[in-house]
Length: 387
Image 1 (cartoon, rainbow, N blue to C red):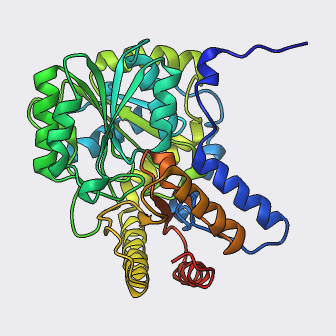
Image 2 (cartoon, one colour):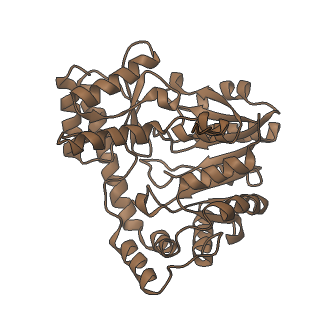
């Protein structure tokens, strides 16, 4: 029997970040000591009070279906957080999902039709492209690499890319994979273009709480953007809750209603007891978040200093916990992929090729690892002639 697969599923390839992480896990299972800098997962445990809130919710019997859009108390807690960020949202504007990735998937399926143009800022998180293809859209890319990953000097390029035919623009600040935090001037430029061309914008703010010496402005807080922006966030990164699978988006009520149809027919709801852990995370973990952020900043500084010792100038990230390391020669796709293959095979350091994010010539490193392991990674790369 020959099984025929849908065209939409054959448009996409597996996630490059997940594939690298799986390869690292396979080597580790064989007894190889791998420094895994490929995965976007904090190495801190979930805060204890959040764990206890989840346990208490189980003990209280919250193990059945939850309301499909989310537990009312969590939706209101999310709306409160967003209002503190100058976003005019109520609980009716919030949809709770099993992870931020599910929120994105539902939005792409709701907002993108066959042939619709989606614009992303490169380097862009790998799943934006896959989600565009699964929705039948076409992807246009704006390259920020020539500007050290800053958006402001690339606004002219963005203006040349978007048009009245653009259906969706995705902005991710702080950025995965660069750690860039876009300036208010840059976001105002995005606003002007979105209003001029009547473009809907997804503001992916999953790393918003992880910034260093600056704050990330929510795009939807700018004048004229409230009605056309969907703000996305979740609990995986700032609260070290990757395995809990809890995310959300907030936007115009009609978007919540339309996306809610897909939500109800697919995942039904986010896990009930996990949502009570989310309430605790939002309301009582500021100290834990600050401790994690401070540790990430120290690790960023360590890596930038160590690479500078080897004569490598790395654009310093202002947020998230990634940096883009220049590798290879001339920005050829094969160069960064080959470098990453050598890094894991010879140095046993797992990284992700920049070409997976639309920007060849770089490797993405996650510094969600201890200082000792980061030092070990740099030493191994240097010893194997990769720096």
